Amino acid sequence: MKYIHDLGEQGKINSDKLKGNAKVVYLWKRYRRVAAIAASIAGIVAIGLSTLVNSLAPRPKDSKITDLVAYIDQVKRDVTTQIDTAIKKTKPFRIDIPVKYNGTGFLLTQGFNDHKTRMW
Image (tube, rainbow, N blue to C red; front, side, top):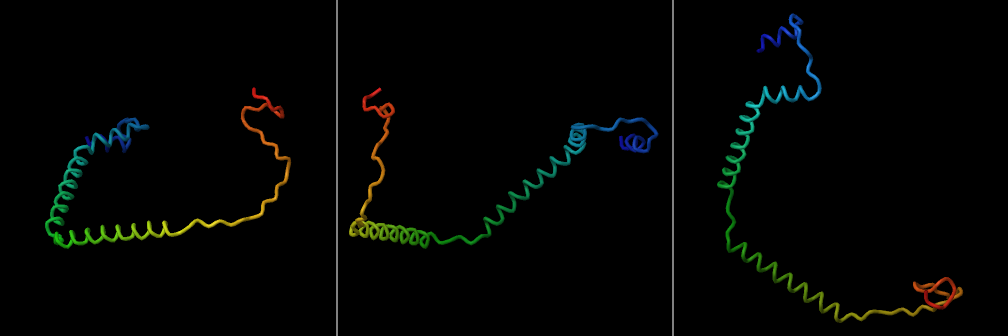
């Protein structure tokens, strides 16, 4: 096959140039086995390395983790109660600002037709 391909490149035999998606199909058919082998090796290496790292990594002590989780939960409860008591103690403040009315005071609402006061 390679010999025929070389003859086609040299111009000794007539071979049509590949167009469009034919190049992709040709390359896929030619290198399908190589791609499958490479993907298999990569998968095996990835699983092997993950297993090796997992087995050699130091394990944390369970009692320390349990104590840490309990401490964090206690801190959350303390902060929540402090926030709740602070909210209950504070009073909403009100600032009285003098309001100056300006304009006609006419309000259009849904159900009134133009300037008439009867409903539609």
